[in-house]
Length: 140
Image (cartoon, rainbow, N blue to C red; front, side, top):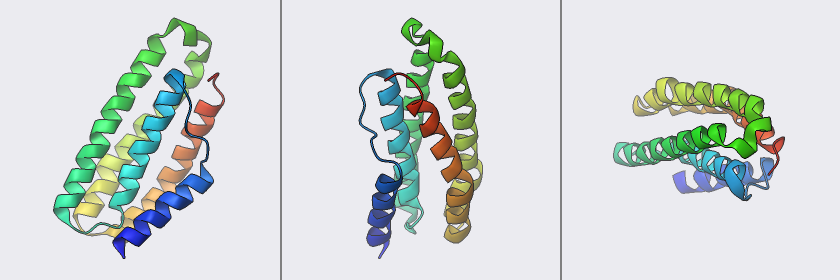
């Protein structure tokens, strides 16, 4: 049942946010953001603590990768016109990570999957959408 829910969530995610494959720094940020979100979303139906820990480690790794890509993009002279948008993206990204790490993950480890799902869909989904909109507005 857990696998069915995970597959369904990933499928719905793909329907809502299509077109993630892009080249260049912005595309790399976008694909890494998608990976990070998918890793967290897959945790929402998981009750095995070892699997939760593994997926959280994966989400933290891809978050660190995204932080590196974003830092490089902010220093990239060819993306100078995109600086205000990238700075705005970074602010939303920091809130996104904070909510995941301080609220959602502790809820999951405490066994409160329903509350974690609610936060993921009501708080995080709009942030994820905003980050993607910001990335979409940049030259690819």
